[in-house]
Length: 340
Image 1: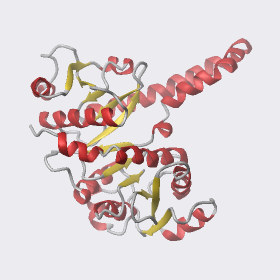
Image 2: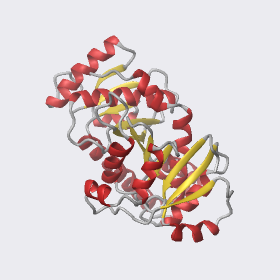
Image 3: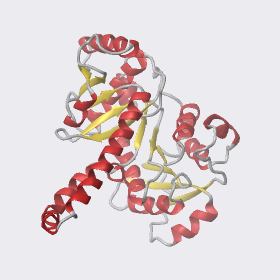
C-alpha cells in the first residue's frame, strides 16, 4: 500500500448485490486511474476468495477486516453505536484517521449520514452536511441537486450553505464558470412558497449581492430538465422526491420507448439505426455511469453509492473520489464558506 497519494476505502459489504460487485469495482477503478490504493473494508473471509478471482496489483488493493454489517432495516444511531466492527464504522474511521482520503459505501443512507457526521465530522462552520446528486439535463450536461436526502427538516441557513457548497462543487468538479444557483419552489415569483423557501430566498439574494454566488431566483421543477440552473437547492424532503421521481420517469420512458420501437417490423429497423443515440441518452440517466452521491460539508469525502449498484457503479464511485480529492473540494469549502 502506498504511504502517500490517493487512498480510497470501500465498504465491501454495503451493496445489495453482494461483496463481489465491490471487489470487481475496485479492481476496475484502479485501471488507468491515479488512485494509489483501494482498501476493501469488510469480512476478510468473504473478500479474499473473490479478490483472488480477478487479476489485480497486490500493492494497490488491501483488505481491512471488519466482521459486522449494518443492514438497511436497523436504526442508524443504534447500529453505529452497537456495531463498532462493522464495515461502515471501520471505513469511516479510516477516513477520520487520515488512512484514507475518501470512503465509498452502498449501504444504508441513514447510517452512513449518521456515521459520517459523528465520526468524520463537519467542516467548521457547516451546520449540516448535504447529499448532492448530479441530474442529467438537456442543455448544460448535469444539474447538481442539493440536498437530495440528508436533511428532511431544514432551516434557511442550511439551504444557503447548500447553495454555496453546490456552487463550489460545480465550478471545480464540473468546470462550470460562475454556476447559476436556483431555489426549488412552487413558483418563480419571490413571494411564492412556504416559510422555509421565502426566508431562504431573502438570505440567498442578500448573499449574492455581497459575494460571487450567482443566485438566479426560484426554480420550478419543470425547469430542471432544461438545465436552467447548474445548482438546484432544496431541503431533502423535496430533493428526494425530485430524485426518485426523475429515476421513475427515466425508467418508465425508456421502457415505453423500447416497447413501441419493438412493436412492429418497420419501427424495429428505425430502432436498430438509432440504437447508438438511444444508448448514449440512456447512459446519461444511468447512475452506474455517474457514480455515487457525495455528502458535502464533511471533513473528508464520503460517497453514497446506490444500494443496487453493480461493479460499474462502484468503479465510477471510486473514480469520482479522484476528481474530488484532486480538486480539494473540502479545502475550498473551508476557505469560501460564509456562515449565516
